Image (tube, rainbow, N blue to C red; front, side):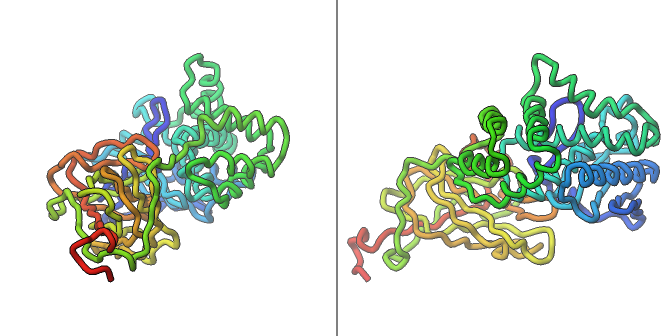
Length: 440
């Protein structure tokens, strides 16, 4: 997800490309403050130090002013590579990743076109939300980005109050990139969804008070919401915090911009007992079995279209060629396998433990599902809710059949053109539907 304007900043909604989070050279250095550690190699120390001071001041202000839950230490990695795009993103917990092409990308915005101080504040705003709400399937990209834009703009002002203009090695008036710019965007007649959403988040802060927002985020993060209608549960949690007409009015205006539904399919999710299957499965596939690349996609998923061989077939499992990356122990959370109709609406969801994938060792992994009848045309989608330090690489082959997609249920998918995902499905029929064999 990237904010509008000229800032080059990519966060969790961006694709996580293999090799970006790679090891540093032997001459890696670390710039430290009390609660920030910046690893860098080849970057001038003055800029690394300024980044550390920016993150420290923004972290302190977010905790002191708004009572956000932020990590004891924020780790920032700077990778310098002429072949990469300039980008800044986070892992949803305690890490920021900055990629630059050269030292020139660190210079003041008038020379580089890049707003690093605002960008760091923006990312810390994201950390505050994602740490409170680990799964944000119900939140639109406009909701997430406008949150980070408003919080980040406020933090820029706080950083300036502590560090003043001399913070950056080639000093510039970065106070202009905080609430001053935010206010100008609100006055613009063609305000973007990020700017309009930012105004709504600001209104929520004013209604609840700065210290009242973090508890709402925490409650939303713990709430059990219906993906097909998340608004009802989220509204109930909000009004429990402070039931009044102002919040009711806010919700009516915020819901259309911030909340997205994952609609259920009209196809009945008929299930069966595994003991009633014929136990003569078939496997459907589009890939050629040879891996040509791998990808982890944050804010998206890996999906493949299939056509059943006829009526009365039940999905019994999915096979995927992949490998887990990140921490040594598998995350204590599930990822999702969805059976969807041809319009990408959910028929059934099958949570799977992350431990099914081995860290750093690619191979075929079988994901069993409750036997569920499939329509003639259907889509299988895998969503790992990945970050830069947690996720699964799914491999793809070198030629595309046009059946592989990138996206999540309930949203319009994008065609994946690099190849076919190495994702296959197993189907079986009921014993009673197999007239050629004895019913067991």
